[in-house]
Image (tube, rainbow, N blue to C red; front, side, top):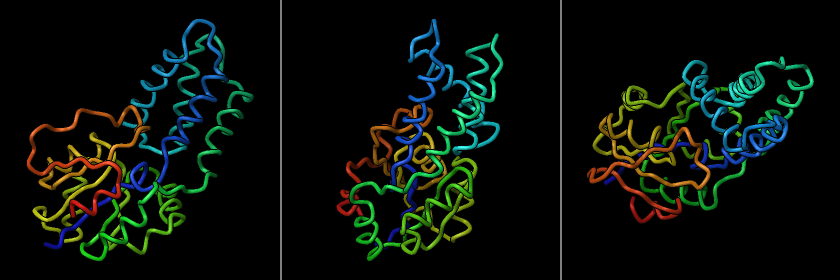
Length: 228
């Protein structure tokens, strides 16, 4: 039966979090905290990112804000100076200026699935950043519809499926995040396929559902052709 397959973008079709992880390592080097370990500095940054993503969304620009806010929290007696801001801008510029690197096998898998099913793309983040990556990926022509949303919750999936007149019974969400791709899609009545990525962002991790009849897990992405 012909299915509707909605794909996540970052860390499902192309590399993304590895760029942020490199920036975080450079950030921790810059902080050079006299008392906290690298893990403890990262924990402070995670807390700030959690707060800021809820308020401002996602993307490199929000990430830069989080780096700045975390630095102020880590060095309460030392104001964030222009030298600090220049370093943080440079770390984030490396993310924005990076080339899109497709996940191995992603393009071939999409082309094969597109011969049998309808493909869609649903991603979250800064619209300009996400559109740049979608265009640079060369994958846009494979999708019957593309959505960029602030947050991927159950209501976002319901809105997307309604906008494209998709039957939930024949629609699946495919991505690397349990938090954003799997659980809310299942809550919206869709099927969900987890394609794990070793560098999935810490704030996107959660335990996968157990025993759900419309949940699958495949690794690597090329194995989707055996499922659909």
